[in-house]
Length: 237
Image (cartoon, rainbow, N blue to C red):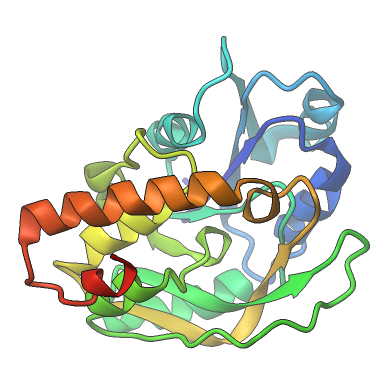
């Protein structure tokens, strides 16, 4: 049984898919499986994914699903003790998993890494630095989601208990980290072991108005449920 299930959700991501998958294959820690959810792609995604053989378990949905519904399906397929997520256009540094597994001995059920940003060609982008935090981070997460989903390694049973909120198309990961942080600590590896690719098709570039709508919905829901227990909510409002 693999220790880590690497979840890759993909819809028409063939352009950057090979570098993403190769970054898993070249990990220094090798006891992993890839759970690949093809969300009814119409490009070369199926051919590329299935060319990687037995350590990649390929599943194709019968219809195109919202992103976080597809991620919940992937969680049910995971057989590892830990689950990691990798967007189909991002890349891991070779020692990412090894460093995170070493860090899990500290007792926090979620370990993430610092991230760097790359362009379409893989060149590094000069972007303002992100501040990262460990321990009890709920208030910090309300101000800004500094945990990239492609950087996360967490206990599978906890991810299944929390599940992604399928009402969101963009903020389902931030919502999960918030709910997790209310009962658990988080920790991070202070190295940029995750490379986030920015390109015209990435959601951070193409969905600016939806980001605003979903953030408004998320903050109002938490304000209604928790009142002013977390004053950082007011920063957005």
